[in-house]
Image (cartoon, rainbow, N blue to C red; front, side, top):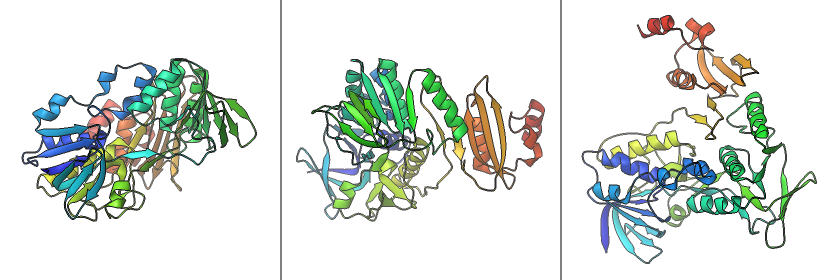
Length: 406
């Protein structure tokens, strides 16, 4: 039986980032095996939308080559799934029947699409948009034209919708909430976004719910709860994600929403860690890159013998659709906050800053987002802004910046 100092289950973005961080450690584990159920090397999932639309070559999304794994001393096993973990024996068993031993194990199993219990979900032409295979299938269908309905007006749904639109499909987005990206934007910024998407030829319906998907073996239409019927030869469900915890549960690890870890990213078994979308730390689960990158940095340090802890930090979000710039961070629904708002209707430039106790607590930008990183830094550091509050909306002048630096 083969045995490794470290086995990483999952060759997605989180697992690959952990490898990248380990490669920079002076005393990394001597033998490392990465097991990925998808064929091929790790890829950048964020780029699935431009890959779908054909704006980018597939090779451009690869995070590394097979040669890189070998050069770093990492063993790579792809196209094979871990089907069970035996913590007492410190072994994993794969779908090919291999039993492999470990000293330390990392679960980076990611997430799966959250699929609502819709009638007709099993019909041909009803898909998710989560991995490389999904992207390729959607592109194949999209190139044939027709009408697509995307259920979900979050980041992933909008990116899928735009990719399909660029392939030539007539696309309708269904959003259950009253406006798009309701967790990241306010109603004004969301309205500007919807106007832009509509101008591109995309139909957006907000405040609607799907009743069922209908068709004879293959999806043909979407029935809404208000009685409207939308023709569709493709339906993409993008209503969220759920941490993949099945392996951990079967192995007896503590699981709530995600695989429970402490600030050292350790599960209820001292030899097993978890990071990324599959884990839950202090009640939080993850779907954005920034906290997962920090988890990878901390875990690489711990696995290399250093002492470190993971700490939650604010995160900023932006949409990955060409020609659309939006940015948000912090608490955009903060109560008892003072608002500063700027709007240029002609330029479609909107800014909303929320200030509480002389600190910036929330930011929403649409159009010109150049000041986003500066605002985010002010928010993270909780620097008092009262001394130049009048300049906050448009940035510090050179003189003010020099004075602040001094």
